[in-house]
Amino acid sequence: MKQLSEQLRPVLNCRDLGGIKTEDGGTIRSGLLFRSGGLHLFQEEELDVLRKCGIRTILDLRASYAWKKKPDPDIGAVHARYDGNPAPGGDRIDFSAKGFGQTGKHAQAQIETLQDYYTRMPFGYDAFHTMMNEMKSGHMPFLFHCSKGKDRTGIAAMILLGALGCDDETIVQDYLLSNEYRSEEIRKRLAEGRQNHPNDEGYMKLMFLREGVDEQIGRMVLANLKAKCGSWKNYLSSEYGWTEADLEAFRNRCLM
Image (cartoon, rainbow, N blue to C red; front, side, top):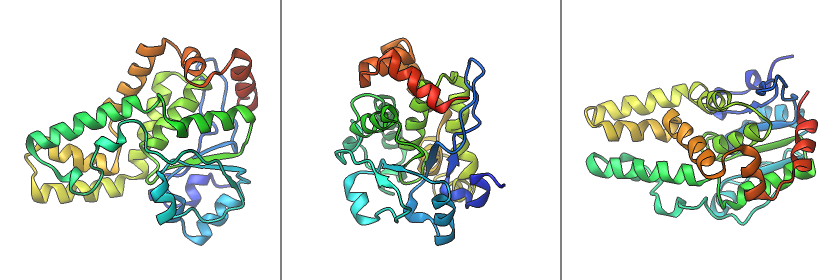
């Protein structure tokens, strides 16, 4: 049987975390944890592929205005709702085409604000608290997504992989896979950038970040989390109130 990603257009950035190895030699079970871009982008035959996965719970990481503008289609799953507010610091960023089309010092300022936004995202974000409550309750198969399945979704995947015992390199490589799935969109955006301001490094970086993910940012997220908490176990305890028993139950449920 074809893997999930082989049955869908790459731009959807949809994949099963099953098969990823943990640091102590475990393997994440297939069919439990799915990450994706926006479900409103799926064609009907692609939605049928998701329906066959038996997904029980969906977490839409988009802000509430995006839910209302482009709601998820029905695939027979329950939505886990959060307060609908952006991640902390998201209100300071212009996510429009204008915001990502800045040049010179304004482009550099936008990049620095984005870096700060992503590194702060694992802390105090109600959407991730909802996700971890769903994990503790065992509401799987579970699918989480944002608009393009790369930023909020990418950091959510980092948290799940870290909780399951994956090492930093494994976590970063999963994060960077979005660049492979979205390679055509990245190529088109960079071509557009080269027509406008090819010699402006900050502008070209923003062109890339509109469609892809940056390795430096991914590593900064992990480094900041470790600097604040020391370990995944401490992070899960301090941020979500998880006990060692909660963590053990989650790993037993998801690993083989």
